[in-house]
Length: 81
Image 1: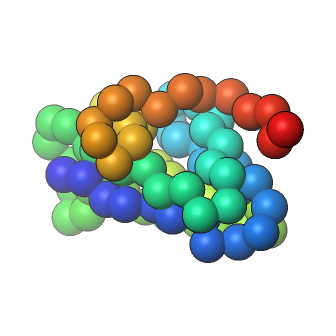
Image 2: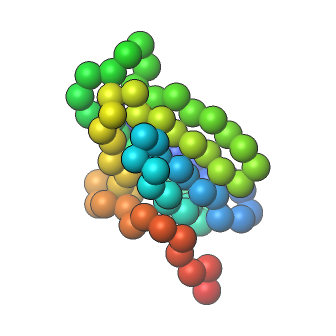
């Protein structure tokens, strides 16, 4: 089950994917697709928003992050230059 996450702010947004402890950084205006695989509870994701960070918990215990074309999105902070 996929869900789109978009950074509509003016600064990089950290997307923290749990339970894997993996971070992804979205540039302003950037959108990614977080996809949950396997069996999940009522909802495939639980989300928590804090200043500069969106934490997404995959309740199925397996998820991926890709760009809108389906390509793997690179983890870690990226250079803004």
